[in-house]
Length: 198
Ligand SMILES: Cc1ncc(COP(=O)(O)O)c(C=O)c1O
Image 1 (cartoon, protein in one colour):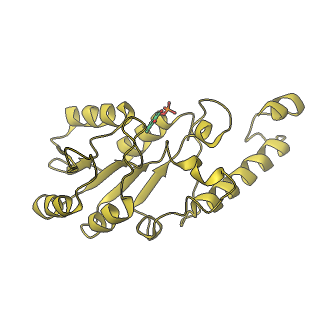
Image 2: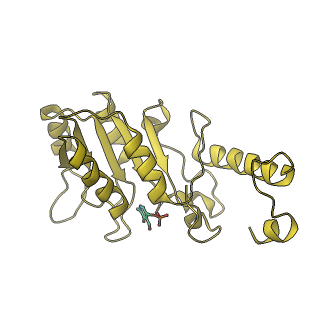
Image 3: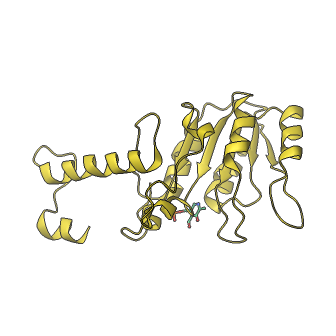
């Protein structure tokens, strides 16, 4: 970012902004590779909060949708869901976790899904408060059986592949399998400019 603004400073997307446009293209390719994006789609926005608002408010939601969230969601998820609840009649449920270890209880989640079929599942991949890592592959595999849309907040985990092990963030197969999964990461968590997400 520093060298870009010192050497170019062009407005991306403008006709003459060749350096910036190439940089965006290159960054998009690197992120596509890092996350093994199945759809080759990477969208940059100003923060993870903005990304979550765009994703969650952009979903086609109808009354009586069952929306599952983890008990460890960031405010940026909870507030949007609360806002959606003022517009739609939603059944918002927390995914079951063991009350002592805080590990996700997959058996109970399987039962939850069979009782109230998931339409949308929002999971924070890792909680930076209590350190719980969500078994997203297993949960998404289960939710996809009901055609749910999965939204994975990877703000705390996306950087894991950057420490000399570029394949460390290989996406779970369940997330790579189709278009009904949206993931977001936060750019300063990838050791780049502070507070620039997407
Ligand atoms: C898990 C998680 N989700 C969302 C956010 C919001 O990110 P931003 O400040 O880029 O909007 C954060 C910020 O730390 C986060 O840790």
